[in-house]
Amino acid sequence: MTQPAIYLDHNASAPLLPEARAAMIAALERSGNPSSVHGHGRALRNLIETARGQVARLAGAERSQVVFTGSATEAITQAIVGGAKAFGPDAIAVSAGEHAAVLKAAEATGLPVITVGLDADGLIRIEDLAAAIAAADAAGRRLLVCVHLVNNETGVMQPVERVEALVGPTPHYFFVDAVQGFGKLELEFSFRAPDMMAVSGHKIGGPAGVGALLVKGHADIVRLIPGGGQEQGRRGGTESAAAIAGFGAAAEIFPRRFREAKVSELIRTAEDGMRAMAPDLAVFGSRADRIGNVSNFAVPGLKSSVATMGLDLLGLSVSSGSACSSGKVGPSHVLAAMGVAPELAGCAMRLSFGWSSTADDVEAFLRGFGEVVGRHRSRGGQAA
Ligand code: PLP
Image (spheres, rainbow, N blue to C red):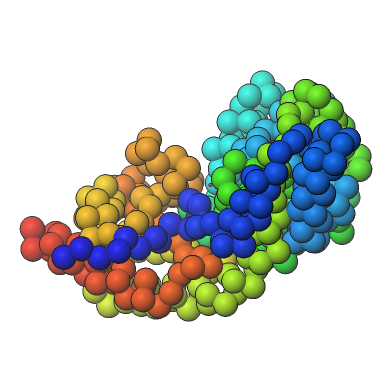
């Protein structure tokens, strides 16, 4: 039986919103370079500046604080590699649950990297971060502290206000990877402690290949790509007016569409349904506050590679662990940091809903899940 493929992997990339597509097509139909002062250039510049306002509004930032980049990975690298160069911190502090974009950028600075662990619920160990900050203070050293707002694999919301309380009033620098919280949580960049924050277009129904770094005035000196002075000298390279316009349109419409999809209810129904069929189901991070659109789960003994392939054959696109690292199938560093045993981590799958998700998607998923688990049991895989 063939059925239309169902997309259950919004954390990897959300489907393009129709409004974003329309904005992109309108921009693509225009010729020119947004830096040109003639009419063609000015028209593209206007599109970019409108999008800057839209992204700024969603982030609770000033327009002047938004620097468009080619991805959130680039924005993160600008914040960390560029931040290391601009501020000269003595070390970078990261949590063990950061996205590879953060971990690799920290490594690329060549500075000592202090890694703060996660607890079993997937939360950053605040007391360990406090100890690292106290030790740096005692030694007269400055840190660039990098934490994420929402974990892309588990959906666990990090206690960023507690990190703010530790880092905010100190001479340390503070960067937040807000990619998975942007558009889903209220952000107030201008009024909060982080010096820099990164967001992405394609996680909110905009196109891939565009992101933004938010910078406070004193962090305005942070650079990665010098180039021809675009983005007020903060990021060189001719801007993709189409990608930026799509990002702006998505920023405008995404929060409402996301809210209307009632994703928390969908996730709850999915988890209840899975538990009814597999009472031994493990849901990672379930004791912490989760953002509501993600479930990271495992049926002990049912390998995620087997399960996701079985679901894929049924037309259900579910991720095994973190999508940004899929292709490279390996154990999740996030689950490892939470102390999940490797055999169980090897069974982890991620379901993530978003603006286009519906109750029908959940129903189809549960039918597929039941089939895959039933096949596993019939081959001798027992419920614990
Ligand atoms: N940070 C987090 C938490 C993410 O989930 C992702 C992508 O999955 C990124 C950063 C990278 O974003 P981009 O794909 O725009 O480079």
